[in-house]
Length: 139
Image: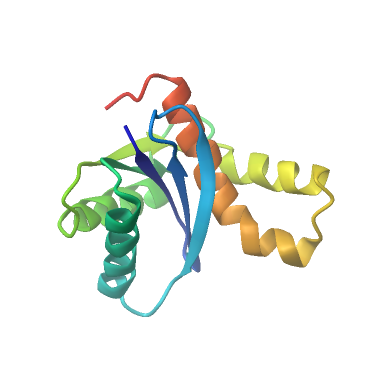
């Protein structure tokens, strides 16, 4: 099953895809936020169709204590809205520590700080998606 991982940020949206077997997640691209969530979602929908994904996995920013705060509530609302423009299921999955992990991986690869900002969101989406795949694609 091919999946699209989505890391919703306030300035950028990181995207990652899985391979056709649903085994390996790979960073795909970063969508710059616009002033229109509708336009942002249309961009994601075009990418999802082009990549022929069967499911979209949106990162849910749960706090380190496991609580759902304002950011998680916002992600839930946005995932619901995104689901109205996609022809595939949209689910939420815990994204704790994905950006920290992505930044660490990019630092270890000796990527400069300015380049890391360009890639961290899509790498975070890949980290989240890989965790979802490794856990057996729970819904």
